[in-house]
Image (cartoon, rainbow, N blue to C red; front, side, top):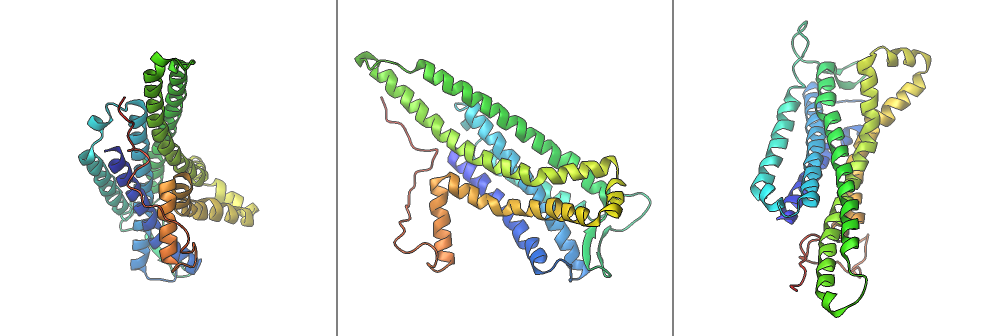
Length: 309
């Protein structure tokens, strides 16, 4: 059950990353200017919102999943099952799609129409609906980041306490009448270790998300507090403001979609084997020779069982 729900959630995090990769990055690689029509400008803005909102909410779901798995392992099957996992994912993506369409209308009562437009003079595609983006940041991104931070800190606290408890109950002497208890402790440690490894991998994904998005959140908070700060700073140091914008607002959040596959791969052996197979097939065997052994295992890092004692 845990393996299905977790892998199902990971697939949709990957899908949200793929959505951003397909709909955002090619435009930025092709040219710094948006040399396409107004229709594609709408497409560009809408899918940017869908990908980002779905990504952060999917990561929040995974954090909740890990919290339940670590803190309430025996109640996990009752709290999180296949049906609820599917319903939560569908809810996240439905919300992300619905929220993206709210970016189109103008939220200002003083004007009608949309703020999404292509600037023909500078060849840029932008959405000047600042009320929508402020609501997104303070209603979706910032609360999600705060919740994930609290959840992972709580998981860390539980992990430390659990490890101390296991160590305290582990027999110090190899006495025959304690062998059974010793095996039980080893089994418990093994199960907890597998859960911990999965949680650590996903915590790295969360940390990468925070590193890539936190500067952008800070910049938007500054704009919210004083929307004249950066225009005034731009008059004094144009190069610095441009570098700040492209590095922390335009480039760094996009990098987040690129690093996740590597985090999955190098923090989990099964993900690494799958990653190697994809690279091997994608490059026609140019990367990773045919001598490389790809282990095909049906054993998930979470589903191996202890022997009965």
